[in-house]
Length: 100
Image 1 (cartoon, rainbow, N blue to C red):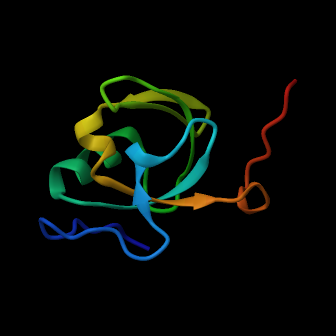
Image 2 (cartoon, rainbow, N blue to C red):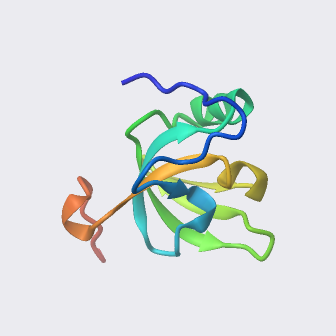
């Protein structure tokens, strides 16, 4: 599936939320971006539609540090609020996290 930028003001569909609203240690699947600027950021970071992420930390300003594809990256608040994700249950995640 190809990601498309939503028109300004479109909110998430059912069972979706903004990445910035996801709690620490929660996993989710990237679904969409609210605008073309955010979509470009996702593409540059290699986060395509369907990419699984895990929230590692949240900062006081609303930004989040995520782990995706074996890399940690910080997403500033203004982008984290414009990235729509689908939260995953532990049994839904393709990647198993272990304490090795």
